[in-house]
Image (tube, rainbow, N blue to C red; front, side, top):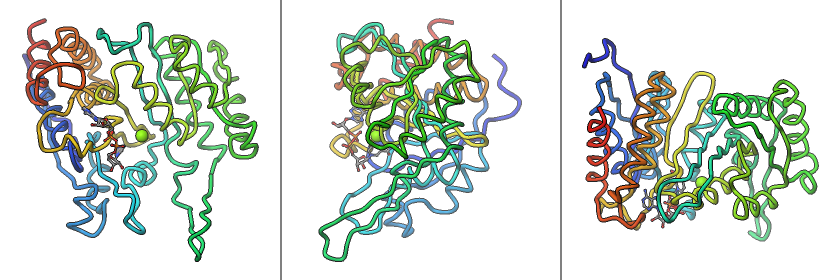
Length: 341
Ligand code: NAI
Ligand code: MG
């Protein structure tokens, strides 16, 4: 096989906890492919904070900006450190990664519901995640801001509709809470439904977020693309992952006009960290999304197929009922990729 003349320059951001373990596994899989890679490692997270006084050093931001794409593991965000903010949220905002794409498909496993093939597209830069929160001097009242703009709502809706077209998903459901959050959710709803006019071939409808949470459990096969604001998308995507094998499999892409960061939906899983037993398939699936983004659609598809094959064969970690370690699972994926040649 011919190795690519030029290498893809990829920022690797392991972060904390199991982040580095699953990232190593994904890198191992990517390195097995006949493509050129130029890996560049950057620091992020609680560990970076303890070493440099910031969870997202400027060099890391510049690194991601200078690379073709980034792979990010996970970070630990301790809730009780005053002034500390999750670097993931800041990374998405600084790089204007406005669309968070979270696919959810049935897997050949008893833990998975059948017939699910949906994608949650979560607005990624605003809503209740702007950091504009304050606690009163007496500590009795906390106030936060929700920020919704027409611009962000429109571009995430366009991204969702384009994705629906690309993936052959006809239905796009705009999820909001405009019955109560009349201005903020109201603006998102109005803008998204207006933008739908640009996509006459799609079937666009709307649903309240609480109804959507229920419908995802009752009849998840009804959904195509769900497009929603930041907080609702965060919650619904963890929920949806539980329908199809759980967080150990849920992958995501953060896409902007100029940059892209690929990451598992899960966090740093402190209880699993350091034991080499975390499921790497969410990270490997995220690497497949990156391959697609880089224009390596064929390898992306083969990687996806290999992930399904190891699940079918029970070559998985304990969260899916298997006995393999993180690295053994990666090896199993590599074996499948090349056994099918
Ligand atoms: P978590 O996603 O780390 O873990 C939730 C549950 O899923 C745990 O039972 C964990 O063992 C399991 N799990 C997660 N990933 C797994 C994997 N790859 N294989 C097998 N099992 C897996 O969420 P949690 O426990 O709420 O948060 C832990 C830390 O992660 C916190 O500090 C939180 O702030 C942070 N976090 C970071 C995120 C990120 O970096 N994008 C996202 C979510 C949470
Ligand atoms: Mg989350």
